[in-house]
Length: 192
Image (cartoon, rainbow, N blue to C red; front, top):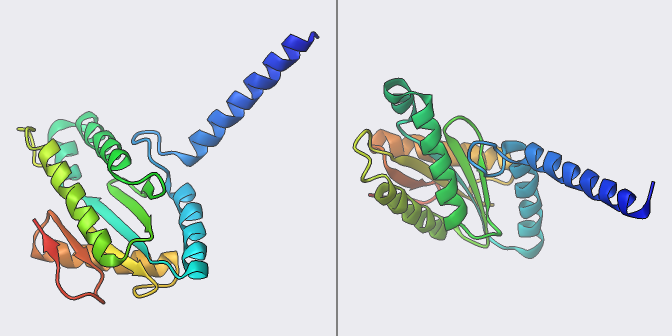
C-alpha cells in the first residue's frame, strides 16, 4: 500500500465516522438535533448555568395541526411542514442555542444566557415568522404553541423543566392555539 493510498483510506474512514456520528445526533427529516443529542447538550448547559449563575431557558414547541395536515393532505405534506419548521428554527436561533426535535410534532429549544421573559419574546418572534412563512399556504394554517421555563426557578433538571414547559403549553392551548406561555411561576402570557 502506498502512502497516498493510506492517506486516502484514512480520510475516507474519518468521513464515514463523521457521517455516522451526524446520523446518530441529528433528526434526519428536520436537520436539527435529535432528543438524545440535545439532552446531552442541555445537561452541559445546565452545568455551565449552575457554575456561572447564568439564566437558562428551556422551551417546548408543539406544532398544532400536524395530525390534521397528515390526515387531509398526506404525510408528505406533513413532512414538508416539519422540514421547513426545522429550517426556520435553525436559521432564527443563535448557534449556541440547542434546537432539537423531540417527537413527532414536538421541538425543544435550549437558550443559555436568556431569562424566561427573553425566551418568551424570542419564541414570540419565531411564532410570527412561522405565521408569515405559512400565511400563503391555502391548504392549512400552520401554528404552534410553546411553553418556556427557566432554570432554576421552574426546575433544576431537564425533567422538571420539561414538565414546567409542557404545563405552560397546556395552559396556553386551553386559551387557544398559536401562543407562547411562560411556566407558571411567571403570571401572564404573550399570545398572537
